[in-house]
Length: 64
Image (cartoon, rainbow, N blue to C red; front, side, top):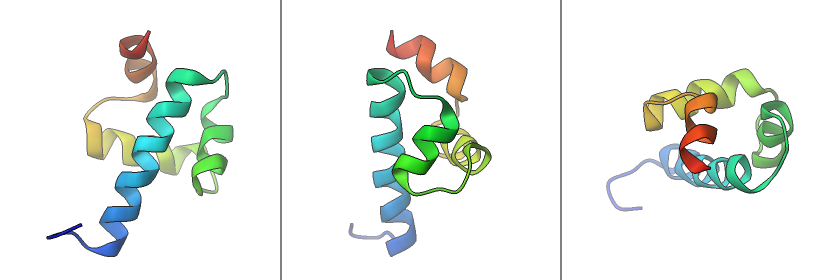
C-alpha cells in the first residue's frame, strides 16, 4: 500500500476481485460490480479500462 491512497488501494482490490469473477463465474458485469461494491457495471467498466487498459470483453477473451 506504500505510495497509494486508500482509495487507490481499495480500487486495486476491487479490480483484482472483478478479474477473478470475470474469469471464474458466469456473472454479468452488473452482478460483478455489485459483488465488488459498485452500484452499476458502468462504474466498474470505467475502472477496469483505466487500470488495465482493456474492456470487459477483452478481459474475458484473454482469460479463457
